[in-house]
Image 1 (spheres, rainbow, N blue to C red):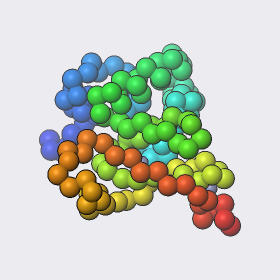
Image 2: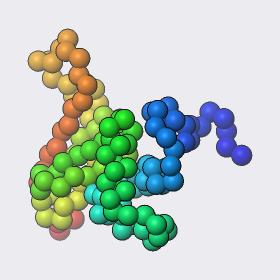
Image 3: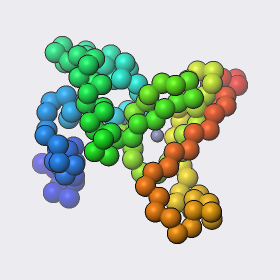
Length: 137
Ligand SMILES: [Zn+2]
Ligand SMILES: [Zn+2]
């Protein structure tokens, strides 16, 4: 039995005000456990193995919906591909130009520059790019 303080994925979908469906739940949970910033193609490929009825179109629909209600973040990498991130706490990203890997970069709220003092900041995205340690060898 789970402790009652634990918020489940179902709770999160319910709180966001969207109907709970199998694909929404599975894709949301996938993104909570895979911090690799997958594209729809990758999500589809991984989940298709467990769910034969899943279509690529529904992966596109579900990720779009989850992003719309703020449960996941959409991230456009410098190569123009759309990636999804189940972690919505503020953080930045480092994109490797060689292997295409996207790493999470922690940067707290104190990262916000003085110029933005007094504004209401609704979203922020920080993408850095370069070559990762693995690719530098
Ligand atoms: Zn790399
Ligand atoms: Zn991230």
